[in-house]
Length: 464
Image (cartoon, rainbow, N blue to C red; front, side, top):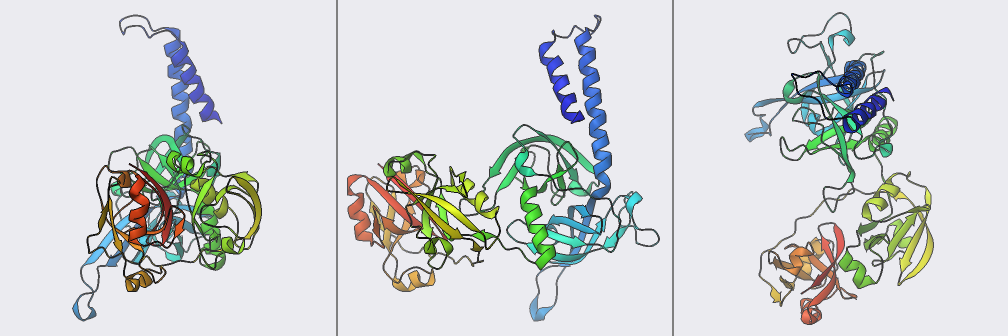
């Protein structure tokens, strides 16, 4: 807490004190107090980094490119990233994309914590390299757990990422551009960022500078606890970086160490936020909950009588305001647990019990878009019937469902997030419609559709 107090003291003096005097004049007391407070903050940050840095690893990998003719391996590749020791027995967490496909992985810790005797120096000024093996990986969180043959290592504890608020200070450590031991300071920019509408993965956003090579390194709070694993950036130098929250890291790592794989709780629904347009069409408040847009035939939600069009308002007594909340509350529980869901249907509230299952991993099939369709006047989309054979290939009912073939930029369909290749599975309450029924429903200049995109579904409201 010393760092937090130093920051508050510095800001209090800076904002409350008089304007600093010109350089040739005698400095006013508030300037001296501010300088002292900032000096204390600097000292505390240095102390934090000194404590954390021994557990921050530089990771060097070597592998091969894709096989050539006759199965021969082509040009050798090298790469690298960062990692963090989370257990004194030699367990290191990094990003999967740092080590994926590598033939050899070397973990380099600062010289003071390298094992005595042996080991080849990899980079000038760094410690000695220890060969590492992959214990397990998780595709969804882009995490890998490594093990090095050394016990008694310095390590960092995983903190509680849920307690961090936007604006709190964080420190990123790692080896950006191969520069081992680099430190940057910033704040939590936002929590619960979902980067892809169809992905359940949720990130923490930070403006602490993250660059190539930072991947897999720790994002620490002011107490030196790991609150995230740095994973990606949006444009170099943009100040927008993303980290896997430590609560997700802990759950994934614990399962990898226990069973070698990660199972996530799942109820078998697709869900989306209630936009103002959807809320108006369904006559509910936009923050009423998460709108269910699909229910898996053999999933727990189907057995609990949940249906598309239902709104999940709470999970295990915790309010749900949007799809992010629903995802976060479900994956925060273990497979096999029973949870109480509060469901809103036609304006009435119902309760139902659902038993969490392990989410199946399904391949994403390609969606063929080859032919032109019939434009829907004023709404900016064209549709045609999808041949039954192609529908079956996509796991859809073997019927002539409407395929969206064109979306006009800036149109109602474009604003609603529709794309060519989407399949309409419901229109204005009519399930499994055909293109003619979509055209008829669009005649009044508005549509409420449920759309299938790859292996996910969602609702969209269109109005001319």
